[in-house]
Length: 154
Image (cartoon, rainbow, N blue to C red; front, side):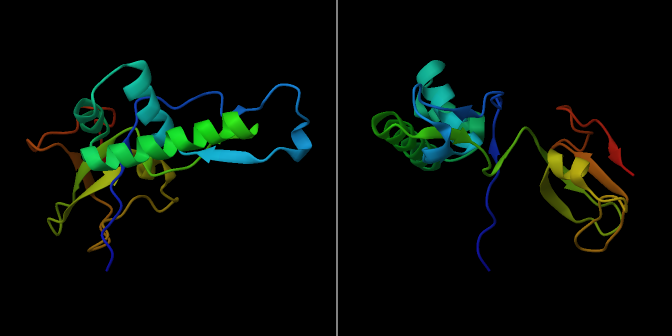
């Protein structure tokens, strides 16, 4: 079984998601797709001028993973500028918050993206182990998450 992908924490999601070179017809432009976490890596390193360790810590990833994301982003940006391609920001493995989740029925603990709570179907969010709908968002101290959810799931 492959290792689960680790969510990258982003503090900034861009409003402008499409950048097109001036004077080029839109219909025949090739696009470079930048992931949201790649834009975040460029913002932290090049705009906030943080070192790689600080950037990686803010995104809650390893320094090596941060370097790879940053390198991929810079390559895509350079290619778009030099070859006259459009830049489009979309997708990626990112979240604004990762919650520590706990099921009191079976005592299963796992990490979940906060966005998954909002995307849950009409049946609500369920424990992957026992199917219970009584799910709690907890931080490491056992209290409710102090970030942005502050809630008990159902």
